[in-house]
Image (cartoon, rainbow, N blue to C red):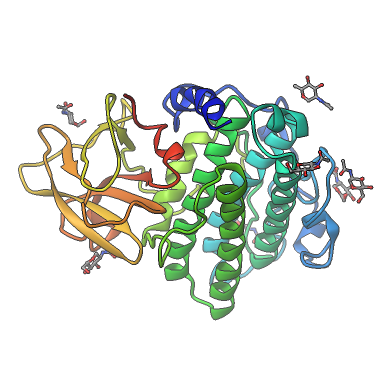
Length: 370
Ligand SMILES: *[C@@H]1O[C@H](CO)[C@@H](O)[C@H](O)[C@H]1NC(C)=O
Ligand SMILES: *[C@@H]1O[C@H](CO)[C@@H](O)[C@H](O)[C@H]1NC(C)=O
Ligand SMILES: *[C@@H]1O[C@H](CO)[C@@H](O)[C@H](O)[C@H]1NC(C)=O
Ligand SMILES: *[C@@H]1O[C@H](CO)[C@@H](O)[C@H](O)[C@H]1NC(C)=O
Ligand SMILES: *[C@@H]1O[C@H](CO)[C@@H](O)[C@H](O)[C@H]1NC(C)=O
Ligand SMILES: *[C@@H]1O[C@H](CO)[C@@H](O)[C@H](O)[C@H]1NC(C)=O
Ligand SMILES: *[C@@H]1O[C@H](CO)[C@@H](O)[C@H](O)[C@H]1NC(C)=O
């Protein structure tokens, strides 16, 4: 069975993370969607997260509430924004991406598609339940945004997967990445109640990830003593814009993420053999019209793993560096290029981030060949 999965993963490698044009876009146009009803500003409208099966065990294919109301919800009262409105607007836009990923999987696959691809007979049901949890996150984040601020709606999304195995590869990468940006959002939060909510959400994403590692990948469920802290959450959120169909967002949506740095994105260069600690890493910058401009000074690749980071010189002639050998090959390593050691400010970052999944090995295969 392991061999069979490996063969299937060839397509996951070909698709990689945005390495080739993805194909799945839902047919209705988000930009023509009317705004969501103003009742959505009232947290008591619709099922309450934690008090409804809709967010836990609903097993239909139709979009669960509030995922079935895709327009932005307009601010209905005038006044200053809530202290963490901006944070939750960013998080809600990101959540529409994650919810839509699972909803697409539910619509596109069924229990037999996963079983025929060699995955357990419970995988589809779990994907439905995670989809339900993500619908609950949509509602939780809507409720965290005060009525003086817009609640962003859904755009259209195109994800780089084409079969059950590549869907589950991307699922695992989305879940470990969301852990990383949630740690960064903790640093932005102004209210203690927001921080508590973020920890609770991060724990939920971690359960989703742990389930997949055990059940789908037959792999060790743990990532060492700590998941990876990445302080500049918006940079990871910006990276997910790769999956947003350009021009498809409701016109009332705020810029995502806000503030947005538009950093050049990068990927391990073609021919990369390994992204394990100690490997040489050559990167290529993936957006032709958004390339870094290196001045005549020192640049550093700053690698984040667990609660720490390690800076390594970045050779701007060959776009090469070395992944720190001392990191354990668990969880993820996140790399950015910075013009100062340790990337002390978000402005010091000039390219990235690049997510380097370490375990299970099947994930890193999307970046490696040979
Ligand atoms: C879906 O949920 C309903 C209601 O809980 C249940 O009756 C039904 O058996 C479930 N269907 C599947 C395929 O699990
Ligand atoms: C969305 O789902 C809720 C709950 O199932 C339902 O009451 C509502 O009518 C639906 N709204 C739309 C626009 O489909
Ligand atoms: C809603 O927010 C937008 C954007 O911040 C602002 O331009 C508009 O005046 C606000 N509307 C109300 C009713 O306050
Ligand atoms: C599951 O999906 C496959 C592929 O799309 C399809 O051929 C099959 O009929 C579906 N099975 C069920 C029970 O709906
Ligand atoms: C699902 O798989 C498990 C373990 O492989 C097996 O024990 C169980 O009978 C299967 N259930 C169904 C409904 O096929
Ligand atoms: C490294 O990246 C820079 C910036 O995009 C590019 O100009 C240069 O050609 C790259 N170097 C190599 C060896 O690919
Ligand atoms: C990276 O680590 C250094 C040394 O511990 C620390 O000073 C720096 O603040 C860290 N960078 C970030 C962005 O957290």
